[in-house]
Image (cartoon, rainbow, N blue to C red; front, side):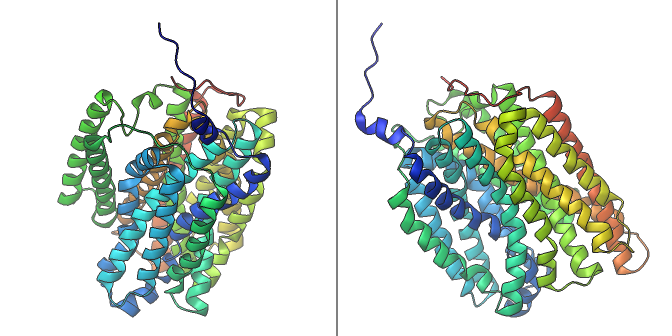
Length: 483
């Protein structure tokens, strides 16, 4: 048997984590890049009425200000992760950040609806390059152990913090300036991140070999079809012919994608990532957790504006307790993991999320912010802060540098699809509950939202059961890399 040759000094240097003194700077740059993506998922929500008035959107067309971004982002995440593996993750992240900044500039300067929708779709393409590259760079830059757990804790909170911060920022910019600044603010931040990346972040080695073209096409088309089907369901219901057609196409394409990946020499998604029970359970949790959380954000925003009659700015600030609790929690999660292990922390977080959504299920029209919303928001922030990092650590444990992009891309894809799937399901429940409801608009909205929160509680309970009976890890240990 031949003895394998020693790796070159160049490759060793690229695979080695940066010095400890630079890790804080690396984390700040990478998290800032990902924060742009998280903020942009909600920053235009409270600005939609102003956008509709300024660019003449129809009521149906206005939803595509959100959907154009979702469709491009969710459909291209797997491909974005694989591009990072082949082209280098720092290079891919830099290109994604610049594309995101450019599309934000174009969106902020839009003079008609078609222009804005094209810019939003281009933003989704840039986000699909940014998201998996940021997580992969954390996996390869931080050594397994407390440092990586701390980095994952900060990173894991970024999506939730970014989403709630986007509501605050969108309300401030819309109230004090213009809805256009909700997009234009990304331009200077994106340029600063793109300049800092080559200076402080080490490039990962480029993986040679053939690109899995068939896998990329079927995976991207299948994921995009599924995302589009879910968008149609949220708008038209489960009986919509186009939604059913897209679901069938997604099933066929994703089945073909699985067959292709099982035979490909260098697959875009190595199926052996799913052979680990813990990792498969972690991926299931990553899918289910945003399904209830993002839907709750949507309905809580409606309740604040249409039931409590809050302004866009006050609506954004209503989510600040969630953001502050989440940020505080993730700072102590690494120490909790070291002392208690992954599973107890994860089960506690999932339980709190189930309690929060169950509390919202009891919401009534006469409930105010302090009596009906504040408590669930605090529990939700605590639950998300305790849950996301253990799930990410479970998924990425034992992942080698060469597969970090694929593992991260799948994680991000499931997280984004979970949010889309959950929102579609909750909107469908809301529409069914309010179709023949009687009462004032506030009573009808609260009744439908409460029913939707009940389904969110069932989703959270399912995530809790998966964490309890599928994930077996107790303490974070350094796992052997996948062969």
